[in-house]
Image 1 (cartoon, one colour):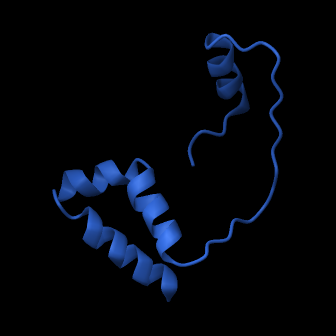
Image 2 (cartoon, rainbow, N blue to C red; image 1 turned 45 degrees about the horizontal axis):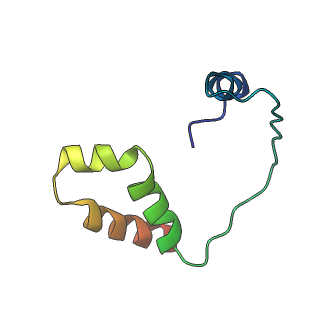
Length: 73
């Protein structure tokens, strides 16, 4: 989501000991089997989770449900 800078990625890989690397950008559209999949991905699998939990502890499930409903519209 936010890790796309090729030079930064190359630097991180080099720092981890990799030397022979190729980075290819592929323009594709992702598809989800239901609105729940992207809702969970964004609300629980990105830094957005930290923001949700910082604003109201215990609200992650309801925020994910709300996001799912919004995507379904």
